Image (cartoon, rainbow, N blue to C red; front, side, top):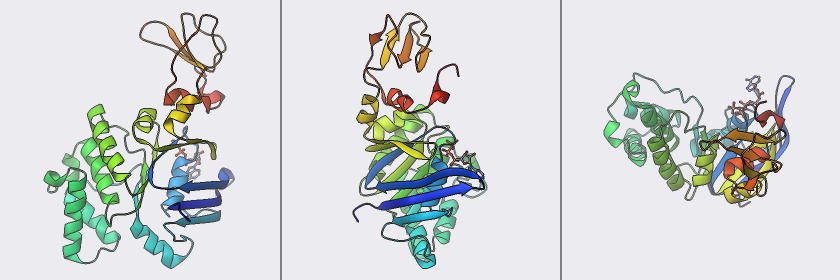
Length: 285
Ligand SMILES: Nc1ncnc2c1ncn2[C@@H]1O[C@H](COP(=O)(O)OP(=O)(O)OP(=O)(O)O)[C@@H](O)[C@H]1O
């Protein structure tokens, strides 16, 4: 198997609520963006891959290990870096103590090695100088980087980042992109986000997930291309376009059928993404 992650026929339900069924997925190296509307099942999938949640059925092989085997699962947890939506950082811990604590959970038992690891991962996310700062005094962007730092302990080959750019200002998002694109070299980075700009800027591959199904799997330019011939500028409000909104120049940007006075506009990744969403994404819905 060449893929770092291979998922076959994966199923997960919460009671009677089916999140996904018969899901197949292969992930190789690079930054892979997972896009999807609220409730699509992204976090559930990421939690299954992080071994934080047990699927109901199906087969998963991650970095050559099978998470259903107790001993392999324990080994795997040391090889995966997972940043959940709410990383649960302790406000009264210093940045270094926080990472040290996670390193202990990952069974880095040798104190000297652990100290070196803490310094290494903090430096990797540009937080070396904040090592002694308490978490509650860090900015949102610094906390996010601290969350990423803890994923890097043990140099895992599979990083799972669940909406890591939420709440970041533009400058912090740029720093995040620089960091993530660097991390994607020689690793699999699976990044769940609603930010199509982040996807366009740094992902080698994009998966669009909707109602528990992969509805698109390709590159960011291919996703943008999916809206080719479907994006228009129009002077009048369209009646039946799939999606439209008023832009700063007072015209309408329309994704869908050509309005009578529509002039073609180059599609973006967001336009392509909107093509794959259902009626729920319809403007005004
Ligand atoms: N613990 C749970 N118990 C019951 N239902 C749940 C649970 N967690 C998630 N769900 C439901 O499963 C579906 C998928 O949720 P999930 O959080 O995986 O979606 P998501 O794509 O990550 O959404 P978001 O973008 O809002 O984070 C949703 O309908 C959600 O309400």
